[in-house]
Image 1: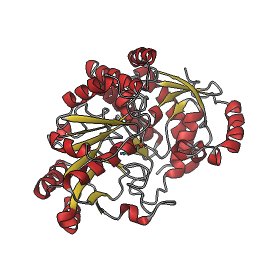
Image 2: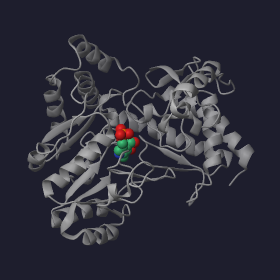
Image 3: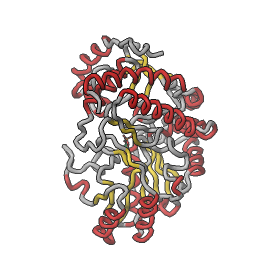
Image 4: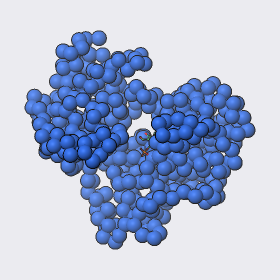
Length: 421
Ligand SMILES: Cc1ncc(COP(=O)(O)O)c(C=O)c1O
């Protein structure tokens, strides 16, 4: 178990590895998993995971509220998934063509997801969103896509034109709208005119300041109607929330089906896999352009995915995650109130976000979030100061109780450092 609330972790092995890494990895570590962006108390290197717990290279144990930034939906090394992985590994993983797992998995996903008549697989969420956009363009013979002004759909030139090392023209055929503001969708759709290929929508919007916005029914129905009226393809980016909110797709509860959905993160409990599912009418276009990857068809991740999705189905995993998330949210709210520290929690409880100031476009709350998560990490609870968190079916009542013992101390530290709001 993680140390009791008053004990603090030590990080000698981590420091030594960081020194070695500084010589051989860009910046010592690159990308969003670089601990350089995180406050004191966050290790850079991990050694192992089991259920809802992870251990860093110094042997410090943490209750894991990032779940590897989403993929771990059943807990680390879930026995059913590991058995499926071992069985597939014993036969082989990577061949000249896929194993029969690809058919089984496509059958499973298309059974669950209303608009899914066929499925396509790759490795990262960015592969899936990129394929979905290309599919929409190939199908319609048009170019322009609408996207949320704050939406993240992946790295690479498809979505990040103008970023360092990319040409601005990469995203020339994209117009933006404001999430949940149908009028802005209609304006952008009018501007695109008869070149409108796709409206790309995040299942839930997460902005750069860490605030979630759930789509309202009118927005969801409205983007569907605009697509129906214009012949544009409705692409749902369900990479971040998919299979945590609803196994039928994160918009299933709205009664509105997109045309194409992109998945990744939670579909294979940590094994590398992404998927696109779509309606039958897009199948021809999918076969007409080139898209491939060296490991896209390997069997182990697909076996892991079948085991993951089946386990979520058989155990009502979404309800389990929701229950743990609700306990955490309620506990944090009560605790913050008792400390006199203002917080704002947003998003579905399965992928929660906690901020310290309301109406804070300049993100002035960041130092509070840094203090809070640093104090928690040092005491064995791995939260994140700027990214939303992820829960899994492995988070137990005991985990939440222990977490709250630690966050009680962390809230007290925030209050000491910044006072009450
Ligand atoms: C909504 C959304 N779309 C796409 C992506 C890209 O996925 P990946 O990092 O696996 O390429 C992410 C990653 O966080 C995401 O949250």
